[in-house]
Image (cartoon, rainbow, N blue to C red; front, side):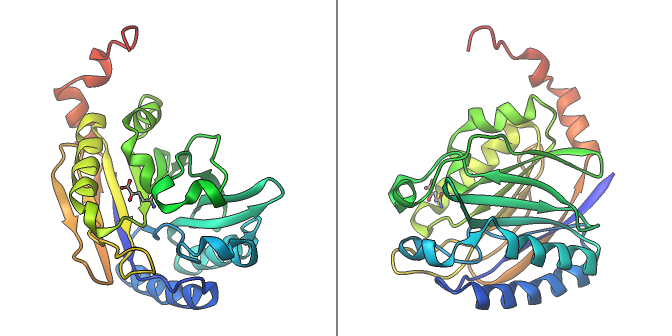
Length: 260
Ligand SMILES: NC(=O)CCC(=O)C(=O)O
């Protein structure tokens, strides 16, 4: 089985959800024209890192975002990895990834597990407590949010449960572009899994963002890589390659979890 993927590498209007919804809608049209099976948006794509105003602009129970993504998924018959958004709940605000299938069904909500102190997330957001596993077209996948990729044990916890594709949504700053690329390539190689990672472009008051969304195969080869500007990055995943890598070097059989 093959999947064509479209990564929406877009700029985000700081603290202006209405503008970001309009822009995302235009990108969805483009993704649909590319005849992709799955489309993915960046981290906090409705608000950006306008953390001090989240009480005002976060989406109550993600209702507006879920409605929007369901409409887009059904209209374009495309699975959506809805990046992440600030979701307001009675327990606080979470950085939440939303996955909707092409029929408009809500498949999964994943709350960012590791909050990034360097960007003040711990002062404004609650950490997640659940895994990022989900299934689309009978393929087991996992979702992660930005800083999560610095915790290889978190990705491994998902691939030992069968995940073959690791979707990553991010707002990753340019000074650490080398880390972004190295970490993502490593996560693909060590897990013998596809990595589909989308980053935003542009800047906010504190950061310039790197772009360089990446689609990486289970051998660590880059299938496609974006530049620094706004772009729809596409690439095709062939699940035979996961099987091939895992059969040739049986990492999952050879693990010694009794020692670590
Ligand atoms: N939004 C984030 O989690 C950024 C993570 C990051 O920049 C890092 O270096 O890690």
